[in-house]
Image 1 (tube, one colour):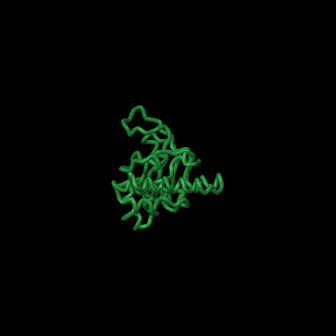
Image 2: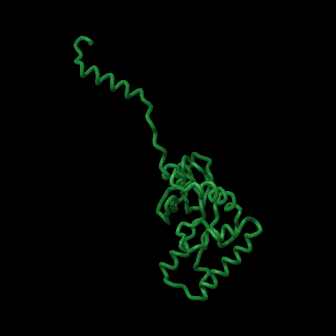
Image 3: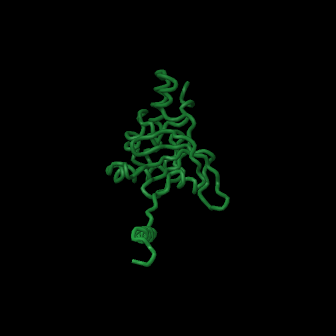
Length: 195
């Protein structure tokens, strides 16, 4: 052993120098960090499910970056692929990402952009103030028969109008249930459907 160095001090120094040489494992950035780099500041949670959440974000264009430009407020659907079932990742998600950007109808939330970073998929969506059908019914109570008929009529007209661009049966069957609180295709601005 070295002269004047206690054995425990020498072992401690060896352990310290070995620890500083080990690579430090970085944890992945949070969704807030990822979105902030794109000028999106997360404000509130609009909804959540077992493997996704929808956040309200405010867009503040970074001055020093040439990034995608969004409206002032957007909804961001964040899908955690580590938690999502395999069939969702292999069948539904690719179909949703392929078809949704091509859908254009006043009663369909517009997908503005999407990207993947790490194990998450981020969908930047049009923000609709009124929320989805389930929240509307929870807040206002049961709707009248005429309002319900109007909603169904709107969904049917929408289904007919999008039927030419994609597999609309798949979209309507999977997305137009009022119990789907984080649904990606929502009835927009439900106030307009009332009598």
